[in-house]
Image (cartoon, rainbow, N blue to C red; front, top):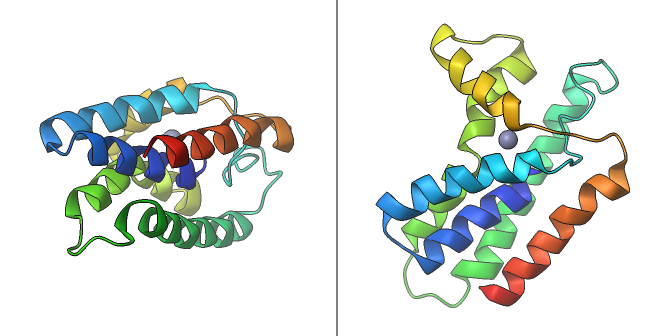
Length: 148
Ligand SMILES: [Zn+2]
């Protein structure tokens, strides 16, 4: 999935259950479950050459900026202090993708990360149908907005 729903999911879980022993494993489990749903994201088409790496990197940077804005708007706005657990949850939400980023964007994969990335890849189902691949992500973001 896109980084936006992944980071919002992690922030949401951390907002409801702010103990890292709960929100970290729960957020990671949700990441793999969400990736299992056929989806469209900025990496879709990278492995087949349908998308250029430079385009994917620029889209990902834009997406991370949007993620930060939405997390702030959904969970940080109006709070007196920085809600560190929210941001830690959000970071956990994209951890599997961050670990895979060197392989996807730089074509370099440290040997240590290979089993983690293969595990991630096992769950990953993407679709080239952009509207269909974005629909579950939009529904998820709206659901988080109402449930937060
Ligand atoms: Zn992923």
